[in-house]
Length: 155
View 1 (spheres, rainbow, N blue to C red):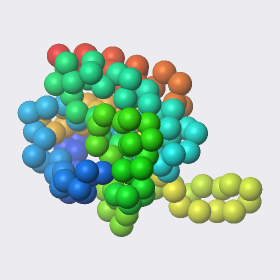
View 2 (view 1 turned 180 degrees about the vertical axis):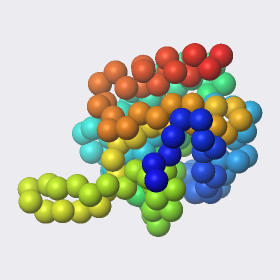
View 3 (view 1 turned 135 degrees about the vertical axis):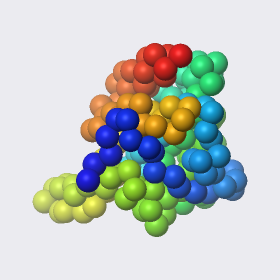
View 4 (view 1 turned 90 degrees about the horizontal axis):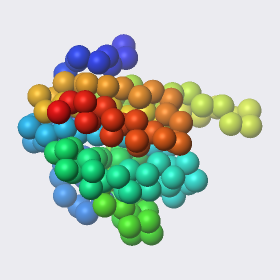
C-alpha cells in the first residue's frame, strides 16, 4: 500500500556518504526532504542533485534538511558528492530497505528489458515526522523549487 500525505513517515537508519549513521527518528523537530533517485552520476540524477545543492542554503534557512537516497553504496555516493560539490548527505540503501518502506521500487522497462529500479520520488516530512507532501514520478526541471515552496508553506 502506498504511503499517503498525513501518515507517519516510516523510520529508517542508513549510512550517509560521510560514513555517519542517519536515523529519521533522530531528525524530529526539523523538516526533512527525502528524495529518492535511481543512480549516482547519471544525467537526470545529477541535475536533480545540483538543483537541491543550489537551493540548500534556502532549505537550511527554513530549518529543513535534505537527504538523497539511492541504492548506490557509500563509496559511489562519496565520489558523486565530491564531483558535484553536493552540500547535503546521500544515504546508501544498498539492501533496498528504505526504498521498500517508501514504496519507490517499480518495474522499469528499458529497451525491452524489465528490471526493478527506483522511481524518482520526493517526500517532505514535517517536524513531527508526518508526511506533508509526496512528489511521485518527479520531472527534474523545477522540482527542487516546487519542494522549497512546500517547505516554505510549513512555516
